[in-house]
Image (cartoon, rainbow, N blue to C red):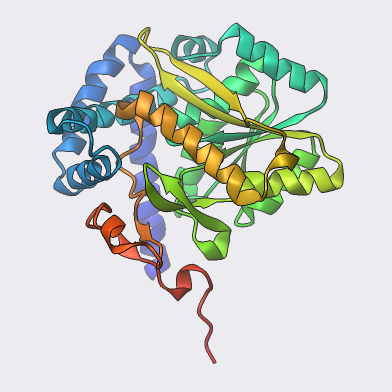
Length: 333
């Protein structure tokens, strides 16, 4: 009986979201900005959301004046909702993708040069600007075949609508649903596709995460980019790691940017050094575009066990010292 009512709820949620998507896609582009202002303000009114954003910004950017930190927090809600609206609005419409997303000519030429050499790219993205657009611009503008690893939603109807149907906006973009993300990504790379990964998620140690500095605070990050590169090298699959982000510029368009690692991959001491550099790149872009970062996410949730007491005071109130289960799943006798 419980499954019956759950299925009804799933269908109601699906019908509601279909209506929302149809409404957004029917709007002229000029209506998206004021709608984002309204939606962003509504989210800002939620005390828990506002509190998380302020705590994150205070932890990451304590040197900024209080007024500036509050401005960044308020504008981050607008950027979040505007990016979501644009993502829905562009639904498989090339002219709309060109209206919202851009790629500089020199970047397009670099990506196509990798394509000509049959080299795959491991794109490492933060939750900055429009991270969904980062998976669109490479196949759309440069012809790069891409695979994005997505966590399936509990509602199977919404999963199909918002993930598969809505993310595969252009030829060459594929969404992979898999619990074994590294295995699925490795297979996609072997099949000639490039991969998009998110660098700033709270990956537990038992899932391949390590603590690296982020705004001066140790946070867990996935080693997947380095692991994939190393495994591809062992199999003779030509792959390069490229930090990428798509941020909104003064002209209103979300424009792609990329940065290579500072030295050959084999010159790094270990995977941790690679991830530290990628996180440093991420921090530098966030400092340049702080209002476009996803401060809504509890990025500073985990505190390492050996963290000095003075440093622990900088973490947000929601942060907790990790337990043994963070590194290894508990087992029953």
